[in-house]
Image 1 (cartoon, rainbow, N blue to C red):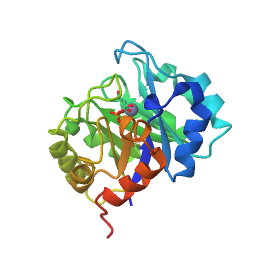
Image 2: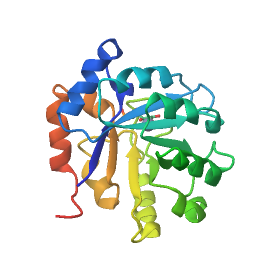
Image 3: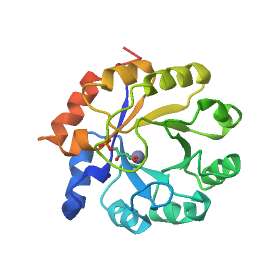
Image 4: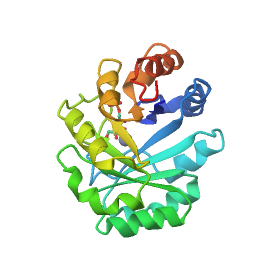
Length: 219
Ligand code: DX5
Ligand code: ZN
């Protein structure tokens, strides 16, 4: 079964606690938290103080997607704030293997994100060091961007490269009910969705529809 990770970047920040509880009650598996520094990604978003604040109200797995330069400088802050998964960008981590090991040494899951133009081959020698790979299906920066169709092949190739390894394949950006089946059929098993969930009329029903629409590899 796929895991659904609503992205709070598309939530109504004026009632964030309610927005987190809404998706948790509706059966989301994780909460996706987009961290941008205005350097790696052209936007400023959420930080560790916010993670700490919502941690008190949620048992969801907190999936912190760091779209920042020098991610090593921020890992401890997110560990302390209550993250469960930390994702760093391949393009920003100078010593990726060391960074992944550090995240795991803090008892968190370690993940790497690849921008759309970054090939998957660079991950070949760090597969033992990670729990999840995030294939960006838009360029980092904003919610509501359009899904890049070439990422279907990228996910397919990654799935092939991983073989029988138990590594999650996450996709993030522009995922909606139109492209969900194709991307999960290609091999993604963790789906981030911001706009498609939070801006739908009934986010809780949308989560249910996501589950019914996705390709089920075990069925
Ligand atoms: C983009 C972010 C995404 C974004 C997804 O830089 O990493 O997580 O919130 O939003 P949607 O699903 O609206 O494209
Ligand atoms: Zn993200």
